[in-house]
Length: 78
Figure 1 (cartoon, rainbow, N blue to C red):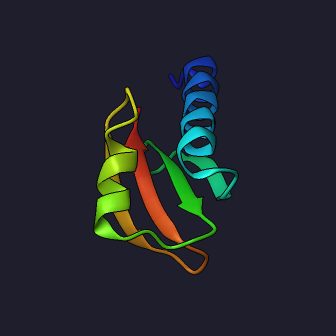
Figure 2: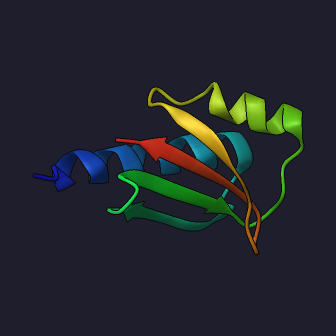
């Protein structure tokens, strides 16, 4: 069973960290039930240093998920 309350709290944390580090640049932040991940796509593309810096700010496990049509993508495992 999926704990949506936990997913929503994690999404709030992700949004807070991204806004604090990069400013408001979230294109998409959604739960992918098939992958069991929270997917984040930004409205801009980040270089390797910025990706590494952002990933270090989260308390949940995160992986760089490539480049999407709107910006850099990340996957958070829940």
